[in-house]
Each structure stands twice: as C-alpha cells, then as structure tokens.
Length: 238
Image (cartoon, rainbow, N blue to C red):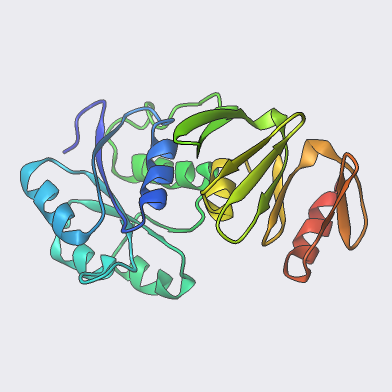
C-alpha cells in the first residue's frame, strides 16, 4: 500500500534524454516521489529489492532484458506505465495489465492523464491526485555546458539539423544538442505544432499559412506531406 501522500516511482529507460523528460514531467505533479532513474533492467531490479516502489515508468525496447520481460518478473503489486517509440508492443503491454501505454515523444498532458488513471484506479486518496497545476510556462535546455531557461512565449519556432537543434527566439537563437522529439515533448501541445520532421512552430506567432508553408514573422517554413493533413485541419479551426 502506498503512503497517504506519496507514490514511489521508478523510471527505467536506456535513453538518458527519455529519462530526463519523464522526470521533468513528473516533477510537476503532486504526490509523486521519484525513487530512482535507471538505464537498464538490472539496475531497476536492485532498486526494487531495496526500496518500496508503487509505479514504474518502463521502456519496452531495452538491451539484454526487455521491458516486457522485466514487467513479467516483478511483483504484480507494482504497477507499470509502459513508454516506447513503437506501437507494435501495445497489445502485449495491455495484456500485462499495464496502467497505460505511452508513445514517445511523451507530452506532459498525456503523461498526466496516465498518472491520473493510476490515482483513480489504485490510489486510496482520489481527491489528492495529480494537482490542478499551473502548467509551467518555460523549459530548460542544455547549451554551452549549462542549462538555459527558455520561456515558451518567447519561442518563434524550433529547427532541427543533423545533430543539433536551433530554438529561434525574437532576438536570439539557442543551439542545443537535444533532439527535436525531446524538445517537442517539453513544449505544450496546445500552443506548439510540429509541421515537419525538422520544424515545430509557435501557433501564436504564425502570421499566415498556405497548403505548403507556414510563415512566422517573415520566415516561410515548409509543411511536410506527412504532417500536412493534421496541420491544416488544426490551423483551419482558427
């Protein structure tokens, strides 16, 4: 049985950036205590052996011992929220009675929904679930060996290159080694829109659009074929 206040959580993922994103999301939710963040199943086994764990955020596709194998081998009282980049594992995940199954990149709103599901089904304190939070209006990104605070409202658009990202602001550009998918997961989905595998735009800063391009200030950005249907459907609602 978990404590009245805190749910003891474990994050297991072989990708450091994925662990960081989940930890950042969880830090915004009341009653969540992150006990440890592990890069593989063996580390996670050691944590479970020495600590009380209520809920595991578990990547499926990991080396040596997969998330599915790990989930099958732990105490059934420990609940699982699977996290993965692959839809193919969804059925097997739910057969293990997982609380939820999250596809990467994981937006905060989607993770919050999964946590609320856990609280509603398994918590003894339904009233004190994930907080009615004032969603953070900023994020931190690593640049030049330090973590920089970036206000969401200052972002015009995000641009991806082969091995780095440019975050374009009104008066400056921040360069970071994070992936565009990692940045997308940090941005609020109601104010930012992925229009291309290389571009995310701020909805508030769109000055015009066509079937082929979105204009931010005086910069024309392409809408890719794979994103076009969803992008135009959303933009035409406004």
